[in-house]
Structure formats: structure tokens, C-alpha cells
Length: 286
View 1 (spheres, rainbow, N blue to C red):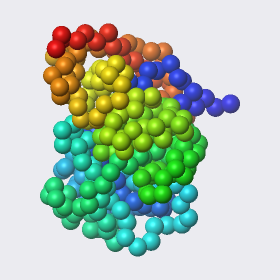
View 2: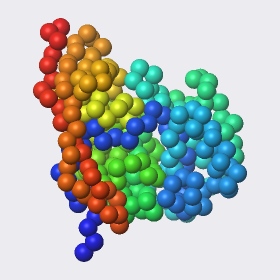
View 3: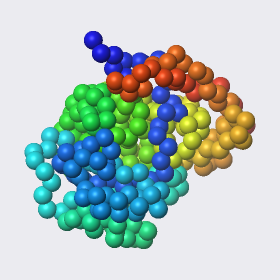
């Protein structure tokens, strides 16, 4: 029996979210390749133009499609633009009739597009890793059944398929791994209520891994609080400070620890892994 990358469950989740500050999510129902610019999605010149457009703005490109789709997208297609940086997080929706329109979207104008509430993306890109398809699709379908509006989407590769099923909540960029149906719904319901669920939380995409791990530790102490009430910072020597908007702060040591080699992607040879270890957060007394 072939060993799957998601079979290894000893790697702690906190600190493993893909580091991205913004996202460009493009509705597409056709054949996906290993990444958004392979497969059948874009004509070469259009794909190159979208790639430049996204890179200039620090946006990670993802393809998205509704779970249980029946055939290709027809008519106008949704394009979501998310900023995941704490204090300025936002999610706006545009529509296009042709992908060639995307580089002309006024995404630099904060007033452009339709402001919208949180959405959940579940990685199901089987061309990149079979675990995402086998484990992600049932989660996406079950989650989509709970909402009448289109707030749940399958998406292309997000990073970390060894943590499948993987879910990202936008605009915050909070990323979850090894989620169950219940945890996936809880993560989205919490975001819609303006707070962050911590079960399965890998971290917030817009901050570095060590700070992700520290923030998760503080969130587990505080319970459910808003996505933007915390700020993180590091002194470069493994000391991370997490500050609450009310003035409280916690300091902790965050170190990386080598783990036994494991399959990071199905079909690949084992490679080194590491875990982020967080000391007990020490409050500053405020």
C-alpha cells in the first residue's frame, strides 16, 4: 500500500500556514493542472498577464470552484481579492466575463469591488496531491451543504497537503489542517461571527511561522477573539511577543525542532520536517 503524505500526524499544526499576505481567487470549473497557470485555465498570454498582475500586488493566485459543480462556468465569473494583513484585512468580489479582464480590475482602489463576508476555501487539487482530492472534496461538499450562499469553495494548491484536509478562511488567511466536517463548519461559522476558532488552526498566513505558532498559543489561552485584535513581533532570537489591542501582551520562546523524515507530498521521497515548540506565554502584567 502506498504511504500517503497525510498519514504522518506527529507534526504539530501551529506555525505551518503558507506565508501569504494577499490572495487572488479566480472562479474556474475546468481542468486544473498542478498550479493555476498549467492545465486548461488560461491562454498562455492571459496567464502571464494575470501572473504579473498578482505578483506586483503580492497576491497568491488560487483557482476556485463550487463543490458539486456540474460542467464549466458559464456567464460572469467571480474573482475575490483578499488582504490578510492584520488591521487592514478585507475581502472584495469582482466579476468578469473573460479572464483577460482580470489585469484591468481596479483592485488598488479600496472602494472598488463588492465588499463581502468570509469565505472558506478547501484544497482539492488532486493534480498536485491525491490527499487533497480524496480528503478535501468530502469536506468541501459537506460544508457547502450548510450554507445557501456561495461561501464555500474548492481551491487549487494552497501548500501543506500533508495536513489534508486543508481549509483557509478569507480574508483573515487563517489556515486549518486535518479538519473534520464539524471543525470546518466551526471555523467558518466563527469567522462569520467575527472571531477565530482554534481547533485545527495552523496559523495566520500573513505572519512568519514562529509568530504563527505564538499567536495560536495565545488564542488558545484567550478563547474566541477577533482575527485582528492580536499583533505579533519577533526580536530575531526566538522571542516572540503577541500584543492584544487592549494593551495586554505575552512573551514566549519559539524554537524549531527536527522531526523524523517523512513524505511531504504523495509519491515523493521522505524529507526532513520540523516542529515549532512554544514555551508557556508569559504575560507582561498589564
